[in-house]
Picture (cartoon, rainbow, N blue to C red):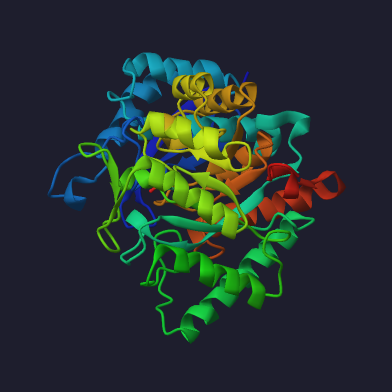
Amino acid sequence: MAAIASIHAREILDSRGNPTVEVDVTLDDKSKGRAAVPSGASTGIREALELRDGDKQRYGGKGVLKAVKNINTTVADALKGMDATEQESVDKKMLELDGTEYKKTLGANAILGVSMAVARAAAISKDLPLYRYLGGDAATLLPVPCFNILNGGAHADNSVDFQEYMISPVGATTFSEAMQMGAEVYHALKSILKGKSYSTAVGDEGGFAPNLKSNVEALDVIMEGIEKAGLKAGDQIAIALDPATSELYREDQGNYLFWKSDESRKSSEEMIDLWASWADQFPIFSIEDGLGEQDWDGWKALTKRLGDRIQLVGDDAFVTNPSIIKQAIADGVGNSSLIKVNQIGSVTETLEAISLSQSGNYTYMVSHRSGETPDDFIADLAVATRSGQIKTGAPCRGERLSKYNQLLRIEEELGSSAEYAGTMIVKGK
Ligand SMILES: C=C(OP(=O)(O)O)C(=O)O
Ligand SMILES: [Mg+2]
């Protein structure tokens, strides 16, 4: 028994300069766990509620003092004395206290912060690294890092409609080699962009955010970057996209508006045609939110057309919600879940979303949010759950590197038992 002795939350700032919740949990045996909560910009409509104060005098209404107070009063009182190693009971208790489907009473940011800090404290109490505490002896698989090296959409002030263009070093033999490949392509891309007189300023996730002439030019410059780095596109570096098209979808008209580039529109079918033609021309292995969260029928058609050769990841479409993932599996929608801890708001439900994905033979990719802190919980989570893939931005900026660097430490600690997911994540390999 490792009883919870105290819980203390505070307001800190995230990578966009917005307030977020940080929680310290201390156990009777003096073990201490700390966790901070991330925050999205292109959020799904069915995500659990991020409780913000709404007081325009502080941070334009974005303060999180209400969530902090909920933790320091209601949650702290109720959880005191509970066994921190009983994660499910702790999370269940918070869900009961909240009593709403979307965690509107306490705030998903309050519940998640406590949930993660409890897991950390329990791991320390058991003298285990977090990945081992959460994943047991099977926690030996290092994920393929999907580096978002070119930012658009809601994450950048540029002309690119699609949000994330990622490179995945599937042909590396170790995680550390994958890091080197990713960083080398990132630097090569920078010099290619400079050579074309494009800006090398970065977006929210550290990828470059140039004003390209078209959305496909992003793929052209990335292919050039891969070549310039002396690597082979496809065999060594595969491409993953997150066009985040819920941001483009106009439900009233049932089509997709390219609002950042030329204001043109595409139907669902035309979007599917676009992905099929890009997948023919470029080594794309994964497309996330290729259609909007409200376009469920479109998703079915997309999955029928491309599901046997491309990983189709539901982010806004599934919001890490076990019941939505269950529905998706039943309906043949997508074949992979994005896993974001704050979309659902507790460690237990995150693990449930993963088990459900596994049960439907869906792959799953652990993910950061565009607003992050140096908290590296998701690095351990990816190893613990053998996700095989993680996306946590470009290989730069502290709040992104905290995760990648933690994975380098885990790889070192695992020594000869460390495995690297590599090509095992690519369909058909
Ligand atoms: C990480 C993402 O962005 P955000 O955190 O803004 O939802 C995403 O859409 O996958
Ligand atoms: Mg996404």
